[in-house]
Image (tube, rainbow, N blue to C red; front, side, top):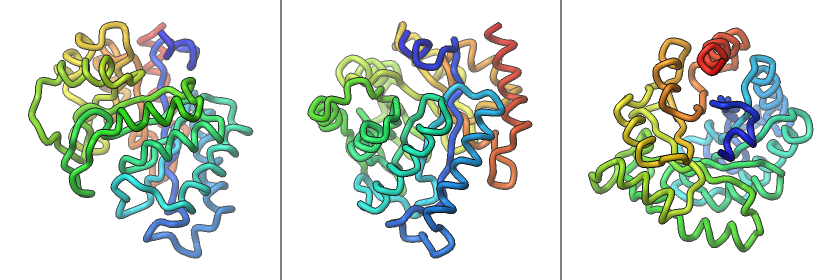
Length: 266
């Protein structure tokens, strides 16, 4: 499985670097200088690495209210600078998520800055969200992926993504199969209904049954307590909320979760 090849671990944990408001965001202010943004990103990334994560994903978490599917040029430049800085100094596999669904832009940043994967919230489903109706981008993203020559950048695609609802209520297994087979995603992500809430075990099991040997990741709510249950099914996880205390990465919380994962995997 490519997941193990990239992360050198059986069930990798990807830690989140949540960026403050970037240039181009409505809530970006003078206190959010590029120097401060880079410093904070490095602090979080080094803390995640010290705690033992296998990879890092960078996200424009602070850019609220979020754009629907187009990012400001200044935001893209800022994200590229941050990702490149982490690429040169952290030494872990890197990913990019540009909320809410700026998939082509995320791919461009990842390719140019040397990241390894991206996350796409609305890849093969039309979703209803607080940004409005967001349509899937699988065809356009795969065309752009080939145009750039970025086939090595993996696409992690959400199914029934958090903070949204699919426009059509379809069996989860069908959506997972279409996301991987017809959409060409490299992995699927299953989340709870909102940030910090885990997915239902039944949803993970249904997704894994449909995915077969392709990776299924937990996308929210993983903790030391539920990791043994969820990671018996899932092939890895993306973790943000649990690792934070007071809005910043807490190394001890990272170590606690990673210890539970090591005990599970052996």
